[in-house]
Amino acid sequence: MEEECTSVKVSGTYGVLKWLNYKAPISKDEHALALATLQKSYESEKKIYFGYIGGGLHKVSSCSYLSKGLLYENGNVYSIYHSI
Image 1 (cartoon, rainbow, N blue to C red):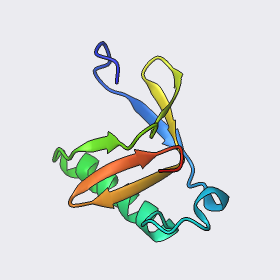
Image 2 (tube, rainbow, N blue to C red):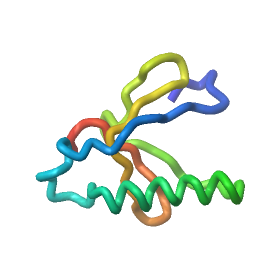
Image 3 (cartoon, rainbow, N blue to C red):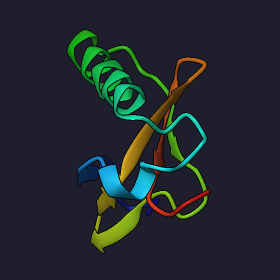
Image 4 (cartoon, rainbow, N blue to C red):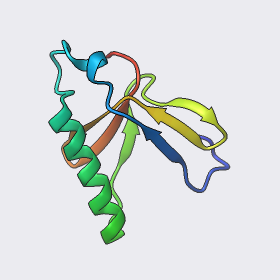
């Protein structure tokens, strides 16, 4: 991430076709769980770790990124953009 950003905007959609035949835990349900975890963290103001795997975020503009899928693991949320 960029050091000058005090916050970042991450948007995107779950890439159904992208992950359809993928054998790792990137499923629509897993993505929904990760989104719910982020929402709960936001509402409760409880911090959680949000990271990315490999090229997990695609930069659109300053402090703004795209994701193609989210993964929930051990209380953390990870973004995935390219296959891993």
